[in-house]
Length: 433
Image 1 (cartoon, one colour):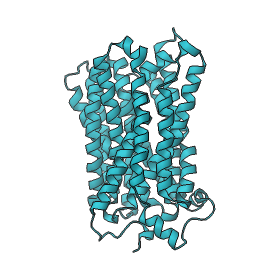
Image 2 (cartoon, one colour):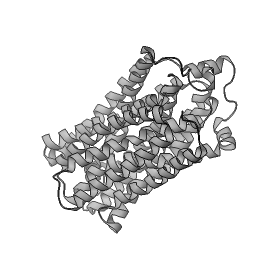
Image 3 (cartoon, helix red, strand yellow):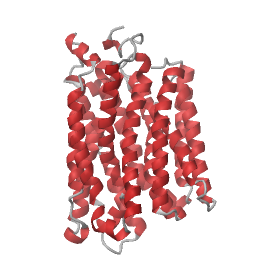
């Protein structure tokens, strides 16, 4: 089997060049993903600074979550455009462009005037910059998965994609640690005065450093061989995806739903949600989140190894059951009025969030190389725009309507869907990637 048939031969060993590619890709992805998610760790602060004084706390928080969601809604635009050129002119070029497009708006958010200074213009500028961030990350995540999967042997695709995902989630850990340190070190008023700007200014610097790192990467062997053999997609790759691979698109989107719930609800929103619902101190909430995110990084790698050993279906089934159990254990413990085991239970839920490391391997295997970037990007970004974009305001509403366990119920619903996907794969006897 040639590289153009999928990935490099399964019989080739995983070598030092593969490790270098994974390391540089994961580090650059971590720095870029930090830029995208740091917004949510300061959602409470931004809700005070960018909306009129006197707005009900729940309403201002819902509004800033709406701006956060706009980044997800913008992802398909960036994802489809960058994937189009990624399939036609090369993976590496888009891989570098996406991180540059992320660093600029992140830096500018740190320089924005507040509502008290410029009125309605402040939230509008925040919204605009968040949309640009969404366009950038829409090309980054699927492009990164395709890039690393096409560099490694076929029997290490699960590990490669999961390692890259672990790198992306490490960016969340960086944001969580910084937020925990800021909330511990500074008084709330000092954070409102100026400290909130620091994470975004640092993010802009991180982004430019990631651009530098990616100059050391090489085009994927799969794309290089397709170009030499003139086997690249013609015209609009996404048109071919929708015409011939609708089943793969549907399966990928359903699997991505749980991915969005694990990251958006369990990792990103929970620190803020539990402060309001269970009166958990901010410092404790972010400390628990840091531990949970570290466990998520480990969980991603474990999930990738499981994919290469046991296949996508079994790994997805086991991870989904674990995520449902871990999330309920965390929220039920807090609902009992205790925080004694909060950090340990949040760590457990974070580890099982590692099931997100299974999803990219499923999607990489679902599409042929010539349209892989477009197929994966379309499926993943449309799913994230729908589910990720609607989840923050939906969770805010459901928490008001259904109570403090609403986030756990929502995660469980997505888990049921992923179990259905795993069952379908087992029954269909699809080959593991």
